[in-house]
Length: 92
Image 1 (cartoon, rainbow, N blue to C red):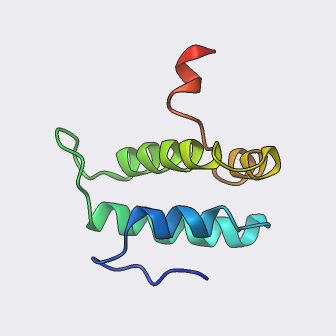
Image 2 (cartoon, rainbow, N blue to C red):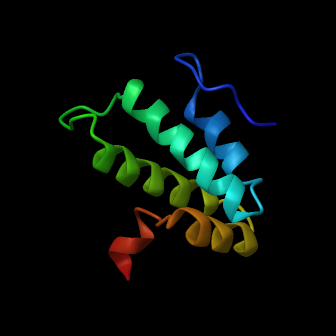
């Protein structure tokens, strides 16, 4: 179920919903929502809450989270969100 984004929303709710997305249209719409949510609820020490930083952090979060799922889910997350695993990307 799609989470209602607000101050009490946690990243696990967002990531779990992302992993269920199966089409680009839904992914694109949700991407806009979670980037706005990320900027408004920014909690990354030493980084400004800019769109660029929010997108980078969210892509890494989605990439990391999708690594816990099937290869198909991971592939969709890379395709829909340009997600990248923050650990594995340094190893390649």
